[in-house]
Image 1 (tube, rainbow, N blue to C red):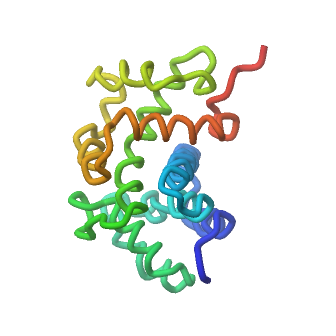
Image 2 (cartoon, one colour):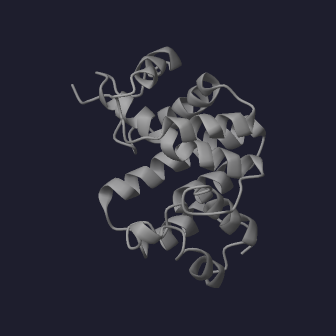
Length: 190
């Protein structure tokens, strides 16, 4: 395969991931990655596909995350650059593959960031549909809110990208807004 597609990423992910919250996380990260691709003038669907597949082995091997990713994805024909990007999102945690490209740095950053955005959107009457970065930043500053999301790691990623957290969050919010209904973050039915 020349480039990973979202269809192929979903097919591969479905062979390993069955838990609804992990499938939703994959979709959140994919939405953020698509928006980051647009920001950098890159191929949106390709970045979405890499984002969708990033936690390929997590459900089955949470204690050995990314140790069971490289060989099966290579065997499935996933391009080496895409495998490297996926491995790099665990840099310093469960991988020694340092994020170097814009795609890799973006994935490293938005993996955790998407969780805080999702949690913040769920607190709002209109979900993410009318969420602004200012609203997100209030939640960001409250360390007790979405405490399981590693803010230091997100800030490290922003630093790698030479971007401010507000700018990255704004891009990701926009990306998630495009997929609000699919992510369960749209306006509730009246």
